[in-house]
Each structure stands twice: as C-alpha cells, then as structure tokens.
Image (cartoon, rainbow, N blue to C red; front, side):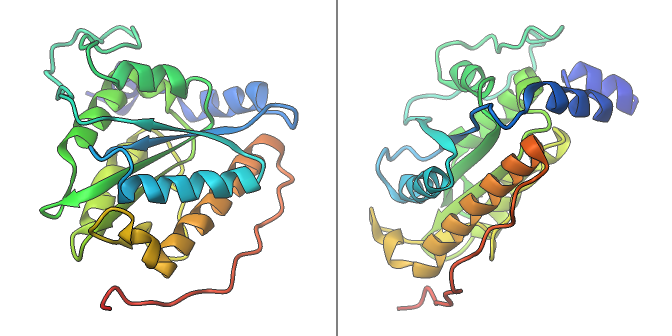
Length: 236
C-alpha cells in the first residue's frame, strides 16, 4: 500500500489539509483545550498526580484541560475486524471508553497520555486504547500536538515513553518535550510528588504545550520562561 493510500485508509489528512484546518479553526478567540488520558487503573495514583500537575500548569497558562480515566475494566485490543473502515470514526467495540475519548478529542487541541510502567512496558489497557484510537479514529487526533508521560519505581520509563509516542508520529502529531524525558519516579500512591525534578518536568511540559498551542493558533506566542532547573536522583 502506498503512502497516500495508507493515509486515506487510516482517515488521515495530508499536510495541506492540516494547514487548511488550522487556518480555518484556530483563532485568538478560540478556547484552547488539552485532553489528558490517565492510563493507570489507579484513579488517584502516581500517573494521575503527574497529569494533575500538568493540568494545573496548563490552567496557569490559560489553557483548559480534562483528565479522562481509562479505568480498570476491560479495554478491548484491536481485532482487525475492519468494522471501522470507510471513515466511520468509531470502533465497533462500544463497551469501553475508547469511543468516548475520541468524541472528547474532537473539541480538544492537544493530547497527553500517561501510564505507569509494568515490567518495562506501558499498562496494557492504554496501549490497546491508543492502537484503536489511532486506527479507527486517527482523523480527530491528526496534526494536534501530543505528549506521553510515564512513571515507574525504578526502570523502564523511557522504553514505555517511546512506545506511547509511536502512534503520534504516524498521525502527524507534533511531539511536545520538556527539560528531560517526560518521566518521574515513585511507587506508593502519591510518592511521585517527592520527585521534585519529575514534577518540574511535568510543569515545563505543560508550559511547552501551551506555547505550542498558542503558536499554532495565532503565530504570536511568546516562548515560556522556565523555572530554575532542579536536578535530583531517584536514589534516596
């Protein structure tokens, strides 16, 4: 399958279509919003703590946000059934949050997904959700800035981060970075708050997302002034 055919099959837009969409939809008056997906089964765990820190910093920048909990119920993996073909914009599995996430993304300008690290990998349910979102509903994510964040006790965070970002790169989604990889450390619930550098990395990520969204919308955004850099070690 050629590049053009593959792009059409996934419901993606061309570079020209992305530019036209940005020109028609983005304006200084348009409210900007980021959808944050908590891929952890723990509703108030360390992943949520990181996403909340990002959301609060986005609010300080005048950017709206919403955190969606993927939950600890069953999330279907893609069955390659073809039921979403033809630009339907929905997955045939409708008994988990994936279609709801896509609906919410239609009115959002940026996307951030967070996950804990299990055996050096992201949580299985968040990978399943991202694969279905990209394949069945990629059009609503196409061209919008995105980021992933991961949290672990000790190792596997960067490998998990790379896995979560893979789909974004096929959907023309600019990756938003921070002062370090978008990771933090903690095991017990709330322990990640003790990782001062990790928490600061989340705030800087939020600043960079806000800057990018404004720049896309107006072309006049000022680069953020970042906090004094913290350097810490996860060995305490």
